[in-house]
Image (cartoon, rainbow, N blue to C red; front, side, top):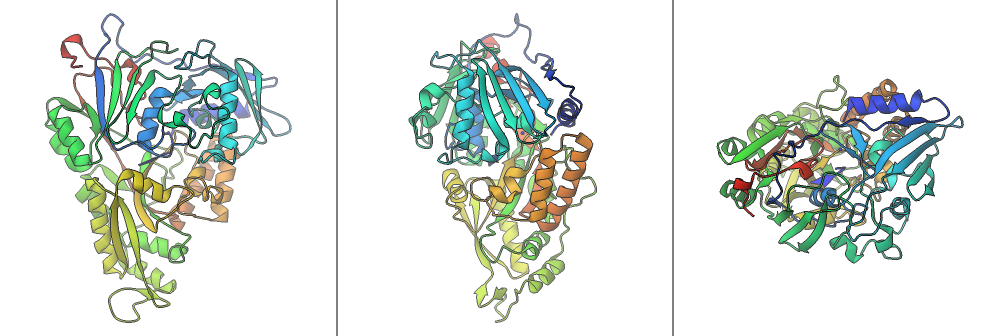
Length: 546
């Protein structure tokens, strides 16, 4: 699953709009929110033990480069951003202890971050504003292979005001600014002069986060240890181990047996895992969606009618009931139902194979030779469809889709790949695919620029090469608009247009299911991520195993 982080809050955007639109001049100082502690009283919590997780293999442990959730989960424990999101979907201080926002009379926007002065990199070097500048200059370097440039393309200049003050000037207001500055900061003293794309650092990272990288053995595990010098709450746990277990069914068996402590639970295993005494099953709304992606660089998919037909041909209600056991609903866009950007008037496209057949006929597809398959200009409508090996849900979804498409004369040829091969086929610059089934974790701010803006087709997460001038206009307007209600109206119009054009076949919003061993205390799973407060997790001494 790819990450948008990895991550929608009405309160966040209302606060942001009030700060920006109503800010007096000179500048208004934004006081960090007061966050109630989630940790137990100090006299109760104790140190010790190791959390063992099961997941597919990460790709790269660099915040600037990663595109996948497994990498993002590990990165979130090793690196810190200027800001971070909490379980209330609010942004709060991280490396920045406070910040100021100002809208200038000429239309520009200025953000000034006041950095903590007690932060050390894991190798003992001091963290400074030079590291922040280096991180964002690295992202904007055309040589860097990153999907993150789109969040900073409106920056006019970066400034190191002093050792612990960093200032950013945007050419115009930028509503998703808080999200943009929650990404992990990388160390200048270790990466300056290196080719960041291939640096050894990417597999042995040094950050400022609550855990210190220890070891990555490919296809075996990644291990991090408690950072005794962490500027925030020093973790109670000694270590976290991510064991690489590609097959989801095997991960569930190991969770049940007690050889791992935590993993995501596929919906097909939900009811059974509820009966496992040693496991606590967390169920909560997810900031995510899944979809069928079509490579619109290919003529067969570069037609709104065809993509819409491929959605109409799928009985997603039956799929949701049969495969997700009531834990999923058909999607009409990337905006999760808990998002203020989700337009309540927009309904997912229905199951209507006859409408699908009419649209395909309009697009020139017909069974001219009577073999049961549609063709156009002598070419059969068939395609290779990528799925993730070892994912039982993906296998069932694709099996049902194969039958639904066969009923309208479209031939789907499944190909199941291991995670690394799967992602490499989609990511830039390769884009070596015809179609695929995938999910995204979206951000706390609902900005969909990285998915659907035409400018993100080459290097962003617009893998499918979707291009629509009106969608571009709405995305850009939504990014500029700092008034919440006006921004919401823009997003609602955007939602309606995305549902009509189907840049991808929006499939489902699925509730998150997480299984964790009951010996761990302090766990508070949230849409922002299962490990968002892992530094507060602890295990009573009599239950510690490692």
